[in-house]
Image (cartoon, rainbow, N blue to C red; front, side):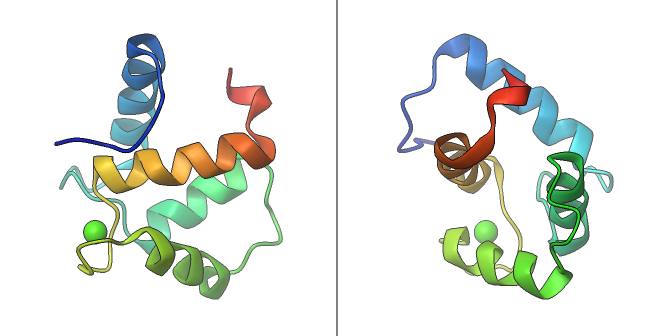
Length: 88
Ligand SMILES: [Ca+2]
C-alpha cells in the first residue's frame, strides 16, 4: 500500500486513527455516509451526500464506491491544503 502523500509517520498514525474512528462498519472502507459524517465533523455542515459522492468518486481509484485508507490519505492531503488546520 503506497500513498502519494507527504505525511509524516506521526500524521499517518493520526489519520489511521481518524480513519478507524470514521469506519463505523469496520470494513476498512469509508462509504458515502461515513464520509458525510467526516464532512460535518470538519465543519462542512451544508455539504450534501450528493456533494460527498462527487468528491468520493474523485478519489475512488479502484472504483468500489468507497475510500480505502490509501484513497482516504489522498483525500486528506487535499483537505489539508484547503481547510484542515483544526485537526493538527
Ligand atoms: Ca475505493
